[in-house]
Length: 458
Image 1 (tube, rainbow, N blue to C red):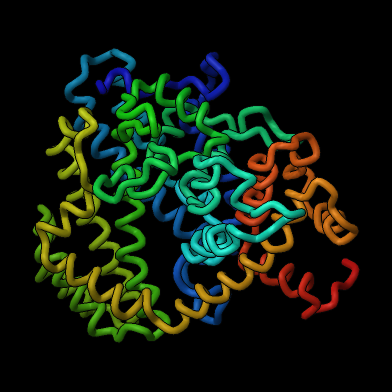
Image 2 (cartoon, rainbow, N blue to C red):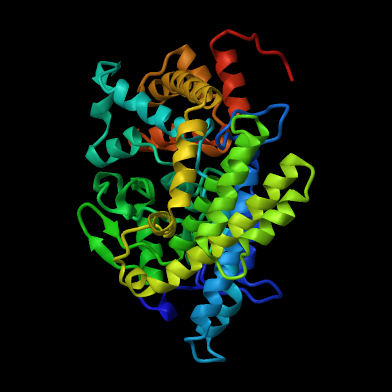
């Protein structure tokens, strides 16, 4: 790949570049932030249960913060790349002024396909299909409705692949190409540019998968426009687009640091532990301009405990952002060649033992805390029960009275099943409905359909 050929202002499905005071990449950001799919992130779990008396991050606030860090990363790296471009060329203008907009937009979109209940929601959807593979629907086992690739999609639900579907798919009554984003912004979010049957944990870009069978053509179109090399034809595997590393790093920086801040606010981690961890991290990251002694002195002058941790969190994020940009630049040739088999934060973790200690603390004290485990278990129950109602109703050739009532609950844009007999396409409508639900909506619908709560007219 070459810096000059990996970006395009064209939009998926269109070739005309708009003119006006806002660039196409700025318009991508605006389209995302005003989209209903983005707004729904406000009631989707990040880590800790929602809502509560203490404010913690949800998917929406997380995505906004990731976009802020991503914009900084894009600015830093963009300035570096622009210095290698001839002035007054499109490449120079893009990297100097627009890469930051692309990375910020990609960061806004990175979680847009995640279902309710955090990552446990993804696992719960997958578990429904694997657990019920032998479930007979009108005499046919559930597994028998789908070929190998289709079943791999359904039994390994992936929020990253669902993001690409939401952004590019033509839902009933909606625009032909989803949000109609630029190829560049779409390329920046495809962390795992392979199909589900190609997953291989030995490769970072194949640890999960990035597109459903229903969006395979969209993936091919994006790769072709951006010059992303095809690594394998069967199963389909592409190289990662270089901008993915920056979007991924912004996400990793935010969740690894801000989860600690949330845990402090909730009383899960004591003040002195978080403070000492952050100060140690700042000192050992050794970024220019970071005077650990002076930062500690400033911190100790802040009386409010939460504000003290917020100050240190900001300093840590600033240090990690500068470090991540440096790692990207030092490995840029491998990145362009499609051979960089690491994340930027993984490199930092191997070089800084204090960062490894923060991750170990998070895994021990945060991600296995009772409230986190409880929301994950609740997600399994809610998602599984809703899918048990939706999927058989979608796949039956002769749905009974109850099934017909269930299908009438599907929103208009997700009623593509009315125009197709293909089981995979009909099952994908269940994904569309389930993944679009917020924690609260999914829980309320579950309680109503199970008869726990009696619905009332609204």
